[in-house]
Amino acid sequence: MFFTLLRRELAGRRKQTVIIAVGLGLAIALVIVVNAFSAGVKDAQASVLSSVYGVGTDITLTQPPTAPSDASGGPGRFDFGAGAGASSDGTTAISTSRLEVARGTSTFDAATLTTVAGVDNVAAASGALALNNTTFNGELPDMSQMQQGGAPGAGTTPPEGGPDGAGGSSFNVDSFSVLGIDPSAAAVGPLSSVTLSSGRTFSTADSDAAVAVLDSSYATTAKLAVGDSITVGDTEVQVVGIVSSSSADAATAANVYLPLGLAQKLSGLDGQLSTVYVQAASSNDIAQVQAAIKTALPDVTVSTQADLAASVSGSLATASSLVTNLGLWLSIAVLLAAFLIAILFTISGVTRRTREFGTLKAIGWSNRRIVGQVTGESLVQGLIGGVVGVALGLLGVLAINVVAPSLSGGLGDGTGGGQLAAGPGGPGGAPGGFGQAASAAASTEITLHAPVALEVVLLAVGLAVLGGLLAGAFGGWRAARLRPAEALRSIS
Image (tube, rainbow, N blue to C red; front, side, top):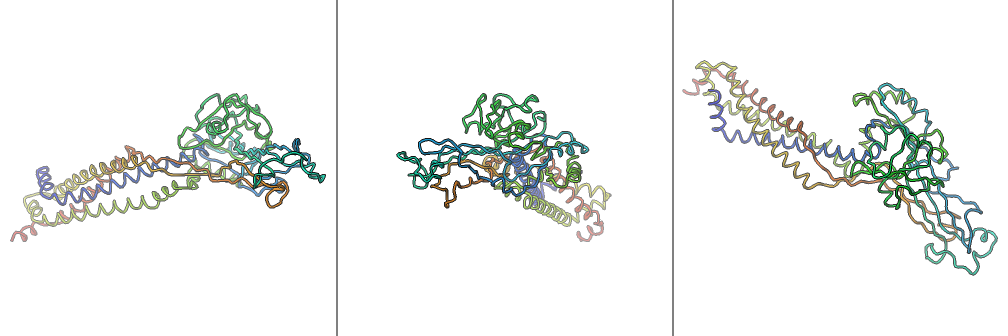
């Protein structure tokens, strides 16, 4: 009897069944698409953050930046004495490198690492020193002759360059990022998230060795290979390995990696760190570890990956904001509307079936049996809506992956090198001055891929079943309140 009435009502009330199923289906489809899009955005953010976080790195510690001292000369500034460089043919060739703390970062005592390692539920911790190597080289008029009042290189041609290309000075400025890391702490930190392209990575024997590992993109640009030498802070180091990011959409954390001890020695920052990478014992301990470190070290900035995700810029940030602020609430609103439509149509259908339910009660049907009948019909309508919703949702996700929208995301600044030219005395007549290399936010183009998890599909089906049960519960409650006398009055 139950299945006979179920089949008859679903077939006889096709319009109601279609409206409820389609309404639930559209809501379920939107939930699937929004969840898949959200998962794709999170994966894209993880790609951008992979240059900052290594695999297994849960927390990073940094020091708030401070203003540079007057003694440092400020970023992008070099000072030369009267006897600097080698003079010949009326010109002075100058070449020098400077290895200093990366712009926008500050250092703190390496004892911080010991404090962090002693915090409860810290599984591993390692320190790093972020530096920037800037090399200046070029030709200037003979400064010694200029000080004596003589013409620079009588009978010689002054170096070409300057605004008019006929005289003055020509400079080259090359800059690359350097990261000093602890060779014995490979399980946590930047090198734990890279792939070895050639050569080898650091070993514990390399703690103070003059060796370097290069990022593959930088090695290609600089035309360097394993076995070559690179000058860092006026010191030649041998390239022993080349690494690339494990993600095709992200770069590694630096152009050049050095053993931490060597980086501290070359930069004159013995016993100093700029970053500490921390791995918690489990994901459930991250919040506790972060709070404990903040208490123990109130002057440092303690960040988790979730904190840094909020600083991702570009269209990736816009997509993330869209999912967070619009997609979630829109899904909830549409889902509630679909549930409400299902409930209203079910109650309306029950009202139109007053004679039927009154007669059934008159011949002995209990309220429980009538509620079960109405709930069963609504549950089937919900399941149909779930199937429709899953199909529409998968088609929507497929459309996103076929279109494959490209998003840009950036985190932090990168400094590039270039060529600067100046007339005698530098721009604005400032002796020995030159323009400052511009810095731009490092940006990565990421192709958005929206994955679909089995859990999301099961959640969608569960929501459809929930919608059917809610509609059936309200409809059954309305049917249970009918009395046999109402059926007799409707017949008369």
